[in-house]
Image (cartoon, rainbow, N blue to C red; front, side):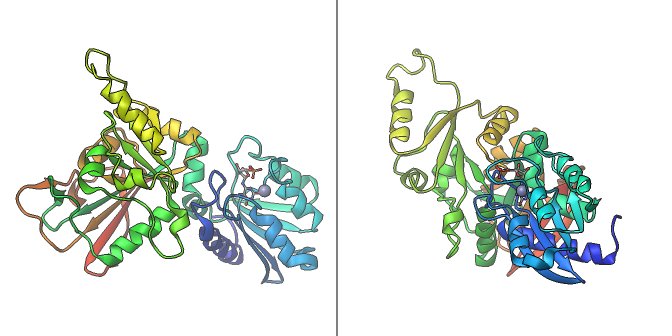
Length: 369
Ligand code: AOF
Ligand code: ZN
């Protein structure tokens, strides 16, 4: 483990600070920066909502003259490139910082090591790898998109006490209580996109937005696997498509023989006219869809339903974290079996945390990252 106790303590605080804007700086990561002088925090910065300004200039501005000779703790290597803002490494040099402690080096090809080089060339002491694992966790969406060219994927499932996730044809079933639901809405605000299958979208008519007061503007893009473009124009998703984007993932348009009335084209035109974006990509090719989403700037994706979609993501090995909510009630015969339970977790997932929300339980499982 790198760094002394003080370094780890301040880096832990910088990581906590970075979480403030997690999910709302995309495609930029939410980075935390603390400027520390004589063991006192004199400046704090977190990447602003929207991605700019970066963390360091904000922390330095707060520290002002006190930055001279101070130590800066940064959760990601300071940038060295002239992007939309000047390089943060230059700002650290200009303010006269004596030492920079970094958790994770930046895989962005415009940076990747050059930030550290710039600082060292200016005579600044640089230490890297302090609290690296914890910071990688906090930067998981950014790092996944940068290195795997796909979004970080969370699979969320809500399962009844008798192992079912809903009831065929009867719309939304309340499996978990209000505390869990509020927590899921808070998580939605941290995600760039949320995905459901057409079956769930049609049966449940969900809105998939974040409806917690004050967080509404952070609602994720909503994606529906809708091979035949059956999402009704009157659905809540389509009716709100101009406020919060909706992407319908359609399969190949049918040939004229299969679609003599050109009904598919008509449905496509109606959805597009209502503000829905139609993305043509075979819903069975998740391995092709995810890079296409990453190219559009989506770094994190929550898969919310239903059973088939969940199974497809699991089978493709394209899930990074599983949140398994369990409610106390039973659904009974005729309910849809959960595609997953605590006893049949894929072996590469580790049980990382348990949360108790009212009468519900939520178990988190993560793949080694
Ligand atoms: C930092 N501090 O707080 C963040 C950094 O588009 P630009 O010009 O804003 O650059 C985006 C890149 O900047 C991004 O890919 C990553 O390498 C870095 N993000 N760097 O020094 C920060 N958010
Ligand atoms: Zn920067």
